[in-house]
Length: 325
Image: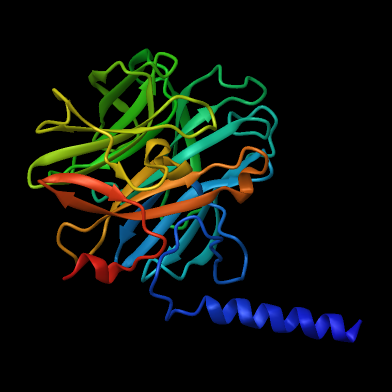
């Protein structure tokens, strides 16, 4: 037994050594560990950069169950500290966020007016499958939480499933969301406190799309979405516009390389602007494993620009240095 314990200890030390802060490369699809040596559990996620630190929010998943929202922190995007459960499932069976419901694609933004961190997510009520199709909202005084659940609703009466949040340069915030059984993709401006939807709500296009991820470069907005094929991967689509409310022009599939036609066996979730680097953006996707959702992997890839259009090319390994200064 002592030999087994020593071997286990040596394995753990090797694991931690491989996770040292000196790590400088991303390996899309590989197992990714946190500071405790545990596999990062933050699916369908999004990142917030706040006061010099990145915060990664994502679905805490069991083999299939939705177990709340996890949060991790990092200074370098490589080494992640587990900060805990940002939004836990409620123990009250009457709660909208009780067990046997779904909390998917959490995104967090900071409101400088209210000094609150605001989380939005796709909420499905306990025991109802995908019937409810609502947006859930929670708030916290700290980036890491704990977040307090506020409410859920359908924005202006529209179904709300896969979604993301976007804060524009003027400080206005928006939710982009799949509606009408995912056949419509819509955008709605949020109220000044970021807790509700305004009536500025527009149809972007009706192409049966989900998993929206957005960024802005030189006055143009770029939106990457996925088709709707359940857990199975499919081709991504890239749209561009000079106004968030459109019109949006389809540019085609931005993925390049092996399995580009199925988004490298993944699905978009967020696009992260890298702080301190000009025109540096990371495409974030999930490689879903429906047999064990907790083991779904993360695909982080650099967005390149060719002929002034975004391209996401597969790389087995890459580093932030690839962006240049």
